[in-house]
Length: 58
Image 1: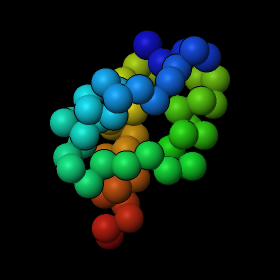
Image 2: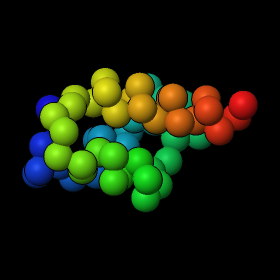
Image 3: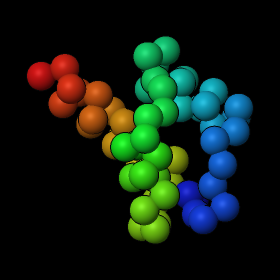
Image 4: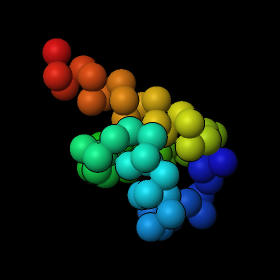
């Protein structure tokens, strides 16, 4: 679960890079979304990054 204690650790970055691909990177908007107080898990983060990345390519 992603909660108020969430940190962008090397393990988190490795997981997200593996799930999202080598083009994965954190940006301010994604970080704001991650820390918005709504309960989510790492799968939700992957889905949100993928959605944003797909929209940016359209």
